Length: 103
Image 1 (tube, rainbow, N blue to C red):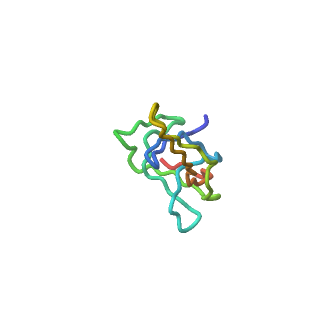
Image 2 (cartoon, rainbow, N blue to C red; image 1 turned 90 degrees about the vertical axis):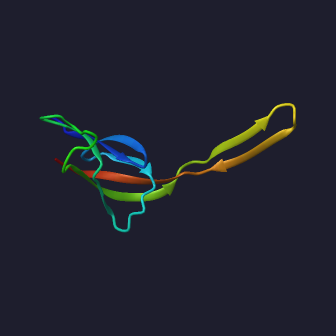
């Protein structure tokens, strides 16, 4: 049976499996290895649900690249007052490869 986990990083939750690459909010990683210790759920032969975290569970990942997402437009508008403001935003992201899920 395939094992997977739910981790929490950057205020969001991600379902991850070994060998999967995911895009998350930017990590200030000095080296190319990252450990996620906030594991909310482990599934596999036996499912472990954390309250709120699973004890002694870790997910190890390798940083592939840091990049910026595509630009989005942010528009402020007020009707009947000729007020319009447009700006853009590009989110900093990190792409990681999940290497190992440890219980």
